[in-house]
Length: 460
Image 1 (cartoon, helix red, strand yellow):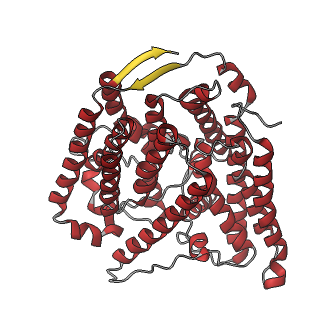
Image 2: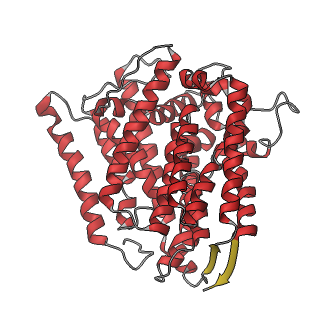
């Protein structure tokens, strides 16, 4: 039974989309032998992974801005890469492991696909479990409207963002050096992490001005944020912490965005993501040119997060990395302590921790293990189910409190709720990550500053 949390829900439309996508890749898998490929357990495990990664479509209907939706392209592309490898369309190899046996590498990725499939299923069920939704239906809807001093605080946040960026430029030496060394950004900006975090508040200014209907200046600030993030080599910041929050705000405050436009935006995002990734790779090798070609094979074979997860699973199973038993989860309490005060402070970010293990190097390199890989790293299969379940519950509560309790009653979502939702939309999909927790904690003081000074609070 599909659980519905909003009145306007096109179940039939959702089922058609789900079945169409899954059928398409099932047919491709079955036809692979006719084009020199094969059908294998790996491709079947990839189909199982894909079937669970697409599950949010069933309960999304026309709500394409639900947090689980952002997981559909991220996880489904990984699943499709496994299907393609299982059909023999792309090579299957892990850049962090020296496995020479084809059978061993296939077994590893079959196991990893099953981990991801179970994780997706548990997260989906935990997010849309009927009893949790029913219990929240009677909650009243306070209207958190921001309508005072918007321009003033937009100016303050713009000043913070650009002052932090100019300080980074001053410390590094030049913007040209930053662009030409994007691939080494983890090393270059190691001591400037908090200033990089402060550059991200510029999107606050753009959103506040959008609330105030200063659309042109708001868009200019977005362009400025894209420039800052690009020069820092952070393609994730451009997409997930700048453009997506702004698009969500536009959708709820200005006017709903048509689905065909969302598809166009998605294509642009993919193109930018791959192009900037190629440029970063070229900068590591001091190459003056970089590959601007964007093809399906390149995208599928370069889904690094899936490789990270597989490598973590392999090393845990081989006992090369011991189960962490939750010890990295305590790192968030150490994060505020400067390394100048505590020189032997442990590595805080789990991506840097995993990077040091996989690359066997003291030079920090961020390799995110993924939500389910992180669960496996801590508690094995129990961790996969536990982390996925917690994440699903957190997403469910977050979406209901920010959006659904208004839209389900036919009410307009107040801009204060839209602000919180847009800024945490992507972060909330991995709430157990220390890096995500640190990012949220850094933003909380700024949000409190906005709400205490810009809000008019009334009950609807």
